[in-house]
Image (cartoon, rainbow, N blue to C red):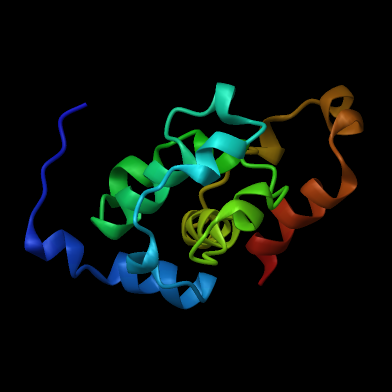
Amino acid sequence: MRINLSKRKIKDIFVTKIEEISGQNLLACYQCGKCSAGCPAIYEMDILPNQIIRFAQLGLKDELLQSKSIWICASCLTCNARCPKGINIAEVIEAIRQILLRKREDHLKINKLSDAEKENVPPIAIISSMRKFTS
């Protein structure tokens, strides 16, 4: 993966928005990797939890918003418990999801599901999906 870095990206409003929504200081992370080492969903992720933080620190918005890892994170909070700096990594991942969902882009396309598929989706997922279109 080729990454184009610039000072403009690091000072981008995207980075500020993640910190604002999550309530976390992204620069406190020094990339020890303990969050990734304890993650039970790591085998499915394309970007590891510590890499998500690093990408956010560097303002790599497109890479984060296209990552499947932000949807795979189950918010089990193992990463939060393992972080020696006390960064709530699950909240950072949730903030990235929120930024994407606020743009009305969803991983779950409720209108494209058949009735049979809708029966297997947890009700809260359907409610959440519809809520953003009515607020």
